[in-house]
Amino acid sequence: MLIRIYKKTMFFNSEVYDFNGVIENLRICISSLKFSPGHYSHAIAYAKAISEVGYDVFLLLNENYKKIDEKNGFERIWYSKKNKITEKCDLVIFLNASTINHAVLRKLRTKGAKVIYLYHEPWDNFWVYLKTEGLKQVLRASISHYFSVKILRSSDLIIVPSKYALNIYEKYDKKFNENVINIPLLFEDELTQKVDINNKKYFSYIGHAVKGHAFDKYLEFIKYLYRANVNVKFEIATKTNLNKVISKDKILQSMIADGTLKISHGKPLKNQEINQAFENSFCVWNLYRRSTQSGVLPKAFMFGTPVLAARIGSFPEYIKSGFNGEFVSKIDNFDEIYKKLKKIKDNLCNYSKNARYTFLNTFYYQANIPKLLDIIIKVDKK
Image 1 (cartoon, helix red, strand yellow):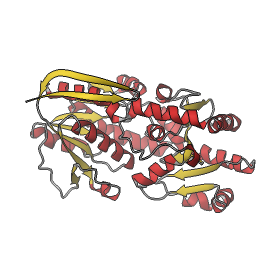
Image 2: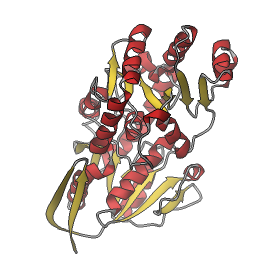
Image 3: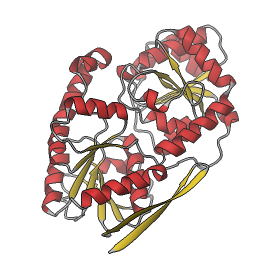
Image 4: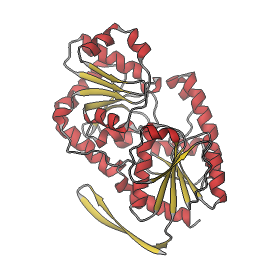
């Protein structure tokens, strides 16, 4: 039996948290059974947070993560149909929706494990999905929700990543599990050197190139600036294959040819590549049509990069206009977008410093260890 006292260092602040409790040395599994590159960062952040207070941690990951794995020192078990799980743990934290989460949950339950589910995208209104993302995404969201319900019913605790997500959860999914808590998306700090605003050259789109994230409007906007001979460079970093889009668009081809537009696409990008895109950007596109919370936002802030955002979802919880980003009222008002973009570019030093500050105090895993440790203790004692 161990008494844990954890010292937490905040940005410009230092506090000591004493949980005044006797707790067991637990073995904890961090699980991501659907391959999604963005979730790799969450897995490492949760593993670091839990290991730093003395618990034994291992990762249970879809074997496709081998493509981007960077071996951070944690034990890994690569899940596949051939690899039967024999590992025991006291607690498992499922980090994203998967069609096999519930089956693995049942197996780990028989070995005595408690279960926490990080529910990124609580189910929203059907018509909202249809209007903002189209029929294909409605079908994907519906399937994801079907399998999420299976794990919601069997979990000891649900984590949602924003107050906005909590409101949606309470409206649609609370009937499946009333034990829910809000913790922001957690990341380790991947900034390896001091932010250098002189290297921030691009207004970037990073992430899935989809309708819900208004990728079409981003393309329209950058072509609008290019035709107006505005001196701005752009970058797109996405695993979405854009060959069809580029082959049909002469302006995009010209932008690529003369170095105005840099594109990485068509395959899962390694974390280093994604980080480089954030690091080289002076602003990132968050002008989405629909979002519960964005993993792009905290990654941008991590690298001292402000954002342009729509006032939807959880963005108003984390973005403050004139501080770490700017809101735009309409995604098709290109004059307003350019005005806000220029404001950021002209005052980048302050925006960058404040974006970095927001990351360290909100999304950095060390800022959330006391809350995370507290819920682990409570779930373990159930």
